[in-house]
Length: 288
Image 1 (cartoon, rainbow, N blue to C red):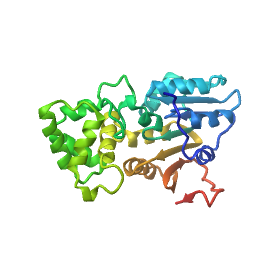
Image 2 (tube, rainbow, N blue to C red):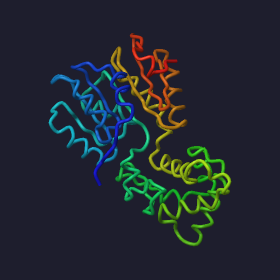
Image 3 (cartoon, rainbow, N blue to C red):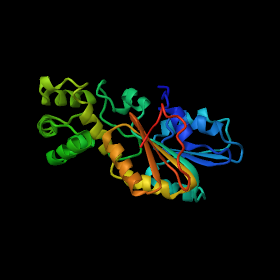
Image 4 (cartoon, rainbow, N blue to C red):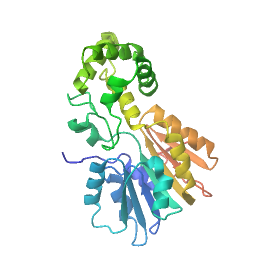
């Protein structure tokens, strides 16, 4: 399957990064290189783009799309380890970092990856295929209490207790193998009258995916660490897609007195150091 992913809020991200031609920039979630391609176009030969992703299929796509640029380094890793990654590359500080959080459309659409409740495929949900924890292990090995906790916390699902109970009852009969089986259990756990806001399994699938990929717990520290490796006047742009991500990122930005955040549906957060953000697009950005 071809890796297709339209970069979200591309113009706003490029504006937010305020790219210097000779700067060093990190795309911590490079994906299909949609944002990175526009970043590297603005760099001269002395500039550098570092692309990080835990999905090797994404990195292979990025490698092909950026193959004509020599000032690109691609790293199979996790943005949570940004300090260690930069140290291994011999880099102390960078001019800008972009984090486009969450799952990509490619990962959801690729049925083999087991992210989607719209297909019947093996439960997986790993962004990094080398990781040990899978959705199948979570669903079949976690206690009812632990399942309730993650579905409630990461999915903000008000029927989490019943869903967890029904999962545990079903797996007494046989191991739950597929996304289709799980989606059907969830659907039967939620009263019909409450199944009005999209697919009834979406919140639980989000919760399981977040647990498998440990997307939320390290996020606050990831933002703090990213800020720590920025040069003076450096920028950090973060795109969040749900309240859990948004909350963790904003808490980190609030801790940093040098920060300004902007919201517009999907949130972009920009950090600056010793230089205030100048909003030249009042219609696009809602500065707070």
